[in-house]
Every structure is written in structure tokens, then in C-alpha cells.
Image 1 (tube, rainbow, N blue to C red):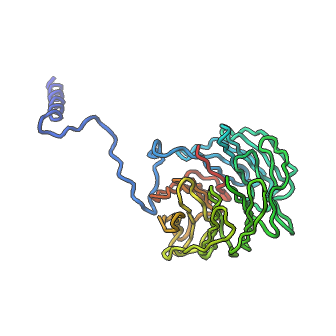
Image 2 (image 1 turned 90 degrees about the vertical axis):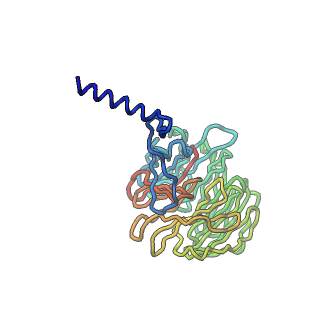
Image 3 (image 1 turned 45 degrees about the horizontal axis):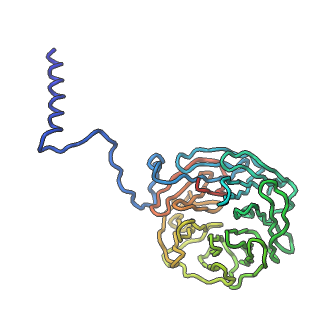
Length: 363
């Protein structure tokens, strides 16, 4: 009985301490307050902390036998589509249609070639076609601009060209653009199309419906990567840090000043537009590690320099893609994202060697 009285007295004393006029009111129990995010090249994201702070995004990753749809916020694999070797992917969202489509092109390396349409939300196949001929490149040779067509870049020894297919039936709509000589990257936006040859640096641009092809003047050979903004502006960089832009509606490339503090080599397919903000992200590797450089495109000035990996491992492989506020890449089979303002870095999942980021959408 004595022990019970002592315990009761202690409880009453604690309540009294919390209600005194001169004491600090603590309130109900709650989790410890979060510290503000500090830009750090090694900081990682707690995925639970991201819930409610960021809108959902889904990243599509191709490996040697499937395409996986992985969500940003909880790293959940919504579905996986079996493929013949590593596939290429394009996504199609139209303002006039609530349905968004996913296009998968596989068999590029192993054969036979196959183009398929899927419902993006569910991964259900809607159409398939096998007789599409050749593809110009094993990567980034497919696109869509949300007008009911999926576009495939093709090439032979003489020229390169873009064939279009109707998105639901995959019925051939014929050639809509061609370029003499090499072409191994297809760029597309709501403003225009472009065929790019990385080795020679040659670029050709055209309207969405093939009004007339123009060759871009002032380009440079040995491109590491290219990207197109929604307005049709093209950005391109060489491995040795030469940077050019082809403004919207223009056909002349303009050299841009590379920030002197950003040393190192630009990685293959290592540039991407972030979407929604005037920023270009560039993946580089240097003697002190791997970095994501964030460049303001409206004034061509450096914004951030974010450390991605150390000197020995973890550098981005097979290119990068971005959708503000995140950039995505793979390294050694790990799928990773980095917040492009704070530098917070996290591994989403492991998919094995060869895993490649092929698309990202805001849902």
C-alpha cells in the first residue's frame, strides 16, 4: 500500500510541475523536431520524411530483362514489364486526355524488335508491333510529344530518319523527318524535333509534323550528351566541358561559358533539363569524385555543385534524367535520386548491373 501511495504522489507532482504558472509548458508528447536540411554532398534522405513534402514521381528503370516502374516516395515497384534485353521507353501525356501511355521498345540488342503500348498507371499492354525495321541507337532513340504518336529514330549507312506510329494501334504513320548522315539521339518537345549525331555533333531540327528540316550551324564534334527544353531549346556538351545552346526557333548554336570551378569530365548522356525551372543538370567525374552540376539556363550561371560519389565507385552510369526537384541515375545496379537544391542523396532500390534510367513522370 505504501508503494502505491508513493507512486500516486509522484504522478500528482509531475502534473503539478507541468501546470505551474512559472514553469515551461511542454504540451503533449511528440516526435523530436527535425533539423533543417543542410546542403551536404553526403547527406541522405529518410524516405519517411519525404511523405507530404514532395509530390509523387515515378521513375522507369530498364535492366536486362524488364522495365520497372518505381515510385519516389516509398520506393515501391508498381509493376515490372518483361523485355527482350534492355528496353527503351517513352511516355505520353496529353492535356486533352486523362490517360497517359507508356511505350516500350525492346529487342534492340537481342532481337527481334518489338514496339508496345501500355497503360502507364497499370502496366497493362494495349498494343504490340514487331515489324518496325531498324533502330538507330541502343539508347534514347524513341520519344513522344503527346499528340497521339510515338516516334522512333532509325538509320542506315546513308541517312537517319524518324518514323511515327499511332499510339494505340501502333499503325505506321510514315516518315516525318530525315537527316543526311549519322543520327543516334532523338530529341522531342511540344515545339520541335531534333536528330543529333554525337560523334560529329551534327544536329537537324524540324517542326513536329515535318514542315522542313534545317541543319544547325556552329555545332561541335564529340558530344557527351544533349537535351531539349519544352520550348525547343537544345543544350549540348562535350566530355571536355564545351557547352553550346541552340535557342528556341533558332538554327545556330551558341557557345556558352563553362563555369571555371567545375572541372572534370562530362559523363555520357550526362545532361538533362529539370522541367519546371530554368535549370540544366550535368553529371561529371573528377579526381575527387563524381558531381552533379546545376546550371541556371536563363542567365547561364552556376547554381549548385552536388557531390554524388567518391573517387572509387558510385559514379552515374548510362546517363541521367531529371524532374524537379530530383535527378535520377544508376550506378552498379543501384537506382538513386538526388535533391538538386540540397544535395540529399538516396538509393531507391537495387536492380543489378545494366540498370538504366529511361523515363520519369510526375505521378
